[in-house]
Image 1 (cartoon, rainbow, N blue to C red):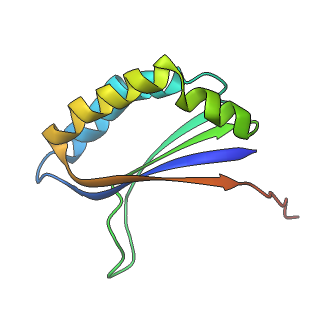
Image 2 (image 1 turned 120 degrees about the vertical axis):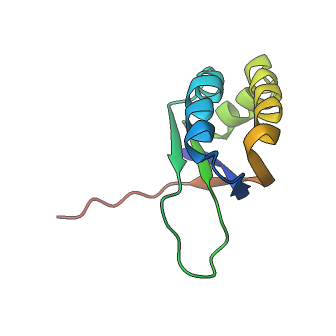
Length: 111
């Protein structure tokens, strides 16, 4: 399985954390869930971090069965719509940058 992460590195404007989270879930999550070929979409909001660690108030993870599915999703109109919605929402709440990382999972069950 391939997971593409979007790491939102930066900070939420003071006093807007709850509004940011609600807007992401209401305005962006439906767009991200529409990516073709996606097996799962996980939106995670930061609760704490180590002292001195960079701030990531939001991490998006989208699972795909293979790289071809990732490539198809990135070329799709759904991705274009998702990017436009993200670019429209972020200036209201977020200061920082977004970077993407693609990983291959190797799961090990304990017990």
